[in-house]
Image (cartoon, rainbow, N blue to C red; front, top):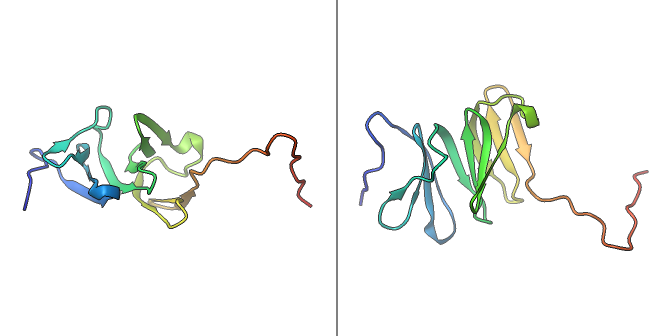
Length: 130
């Protein structure tokens, strides 16, 4: 089967399939999600997306010309040069078995650990490194 996706002059650059067969594609015109009937384009993601990866949590990670972006529910967040990337132009993203996001720029490979840092429980002291 085939379903029209790309608009005139638009190219598909990446695809990912996650839990419950949720499919997403990265295109030169943004990102699109398959809803079972048609492709849906989330608002705010209409710029070129070079690659897409879906985490087990359902978060969607995007390689863009403005850094790494991710969508978790209705929230769109970004990691870019101002936040530690060596370059804003990200070419590829992939997620490993530990949930870390690997991002490739033209001159570097970056690993992003999206797991929150755990604070000590109430009444416990943090251990000092020796």
